[in-house]
Image (cartoon, rainbow, N blue to C red; front, side, top):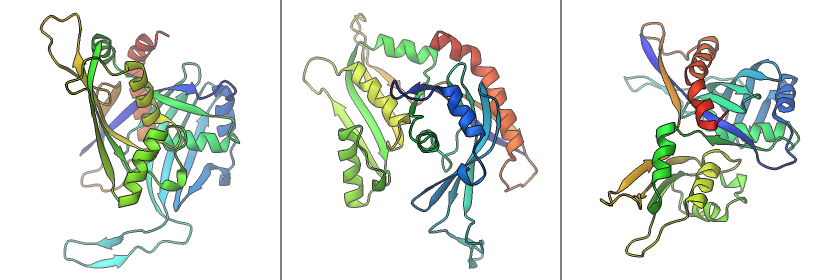
Length: 294
């Protein structure tokens, strides 16, 4: 039996000039004791375990442990039972990851219910006494970068944002903060935004759009982005053909089939997922270096 695993890649960029060097951050993460590898946030625990490597590269497993509002255990016949867990236990979702400090690259297993890059940013920020402030910029494919370069006039932008816990506070981008306030006010889960030039001439600001995309996808305390599409045309194209760039879909990524036991409902062991991350980085490393010019 096979299951599909996916890996995403991010360029790690200091959020401010005084941020700790990345190799020092890695050494700090390696030295955390067991209790210090937990970060508690509003009924959820984020745990980094195990962590192995050197100041140049570390591997680990990020676990999101849901502690509150746990579901019932049910079967197909309608039988329901409460989950019998100890007080310090919860439901865990894991993401294997690798950080390479020499190239400032994060490779992380994609898991919809696990730890997001935003949460990893927060974890590093808190575990370095707020001195390790980084953002993880998604890395576009070469073809994605070319499509973006060719899109000289941007006429429309479509974004879908998921709700974020209001306790985080969204101070870095007030427009995002006000949008998420609407979700919290009415109890919604998602909001769809469409910004269009309509019949007005001109173009939206590409630089601002890209900065907003990077912040939304990776910066600390930003909501999860489910869709980010821009459309327009190339001024040098006499046909004026409308082009669409899906910034999420055009990121560098990797997927592979992993062998598991037939009928297994268990999670894939960490060592298998670690090998998958190593395989992903080896496969996509050349393209990443080419795109980043390193």
